[in-house]
Length: 515
Image (tube, helix red, strand yellow):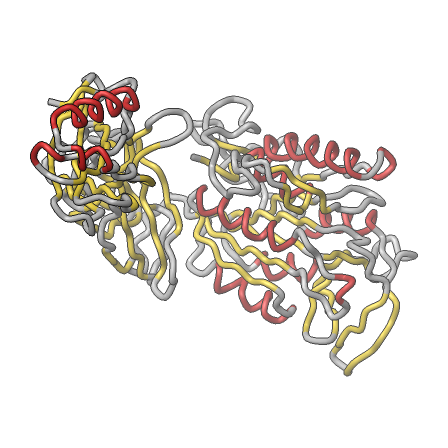
C-alpha cells in the first residue's frame, strides 16, 4: 500500500537521507531518475490505457491506482523496462472512476532510487464500449439497439450516408439503460451507417467517453415511412464565390456550416449546394425533396446576394444572384416559388440575402436568346414584398395535441431584411471566445435554436423556445431573430442601418426545429 503523499519532495529527501546512511559512499553520487511527465489515461476496448513520456535515468516504472473515495494509492504494476511507456489496466471495473499515477525507479534492492510523482493522479472513468446489436428498418424509420455501458450518463449516436467520408452527430440519448433509438429522419432508398459511444459527465466542463462502436449499415426501404408521420428534409444553398472577387462573401460559408449542423440536429435530412448555377439549384429541388408527401416539411435555405431587376417597377420580382462561371444569373423568387410549389406538403423558405448585397452593381446574365449585359439596380422594398407575395398560397389549418400548426398554408417564409435594407455580415462571438464572420440573420436563427455559431454544437436549450416545449415555431424563431439581427446590425454598423427581419404568415405555429 502506497500513501497518496501531500509532500512528495519531503518524502524524497527522507529516502535520500536513509540511502546515504545505509549504502556505500559511492551510492551518494547516484541521482534519482526524473519524474514521468505527460501522463494520460483513456478508455480503450476492455481496459484503461496509460501513456507517459520516458524518464531520464530510469530502469523501469511503478504504476499506482486509487479510487475517488480512497486516500491512498495501490501499486498495480511494476514495469522492468525503461523503454515501455504504456500500460493496459484490464482489471478496471466498468463505471468506476480511478486516479492513476506513475513514478520511475533506478537500481534494485537497497540501492533503488525513485522519482517524484503526481500525488493526486490522472482521473478517468472506465466505460465499456457499447456495440450496436441490431438495426431494424421500420415504418417510422431505422431503429437502433445497442449494448449497455454501466453507469454511463448516456450515449452519443453518429450517422453517415453511404459514400460519406465522415460521421455526423445524430443525437444524444440520456441514461445508461436507454438502449434504443429510432432515426425518423432517414430517406427511402438510402443506406446509412451508424456508430455509438458512451459518455459520462465529469463536471460542467469535461466528460469521459468510451471507445466508439464499430459501424453498422442498413438500407431504408422505399415506401416504408408510415402514413401521418412527418419527415423533415432540407436543401441548403450557399453562394459566396462570384465572378468579381470583390463581390465574394466571407460569412456565407460559415452560414452554410451552421445551418447544416442545426438542421441535422433537428432531425432534417440535409442536401447542400455551394456556388452552383441556377439550373443546378432548380434541378436539386425535386431531388432533395423526393418522396415528400402532404404530411412532410421541406425547408429551402439560401445565403448569398439578392437583387431586383428594375427599381422603378413596383411589381418587380426579387431574385437570388447566382454565379455561373464568369456570369451572374438571377433566380427570381417567382421561379423559386413555382419549383417549390410542385413539392407536396409544407414548404419553409429562409432567405439570408438582401436587395443590395455586398456592392454588386452590374452583372452579365444569360437569357434564352443569348447573352446580354445590363445594369441591375437594387430595391430591397420590392425584393421583400415579392418574397411574401411569391410564397403566399394559403389552405386549411389543423392543430396537433402540442398546439403546433400542422397545415396552414403551403409556404412559410422568413427573410433577412425589410424595406430598403441590407442583410449584413457581422463579427460573431463563439462560445470558445473566437470571432468569425456570419450573417446576422443566420446567427439569430442558429442561436435561437440553441446552436453556437462557432463550435456548431447544440448548447442544451433553445433560447427562442418561449413556452419550453422543445419545439421552435416559425413565430418564435422570427421574434428571436428579429431582435438578434437588429441588435447586431446596429452594433456593428449604425442605427440608420438597422436590419429588420420579415416573416409570413404572422403568428404561425408551424414547428421549424425540435429536440
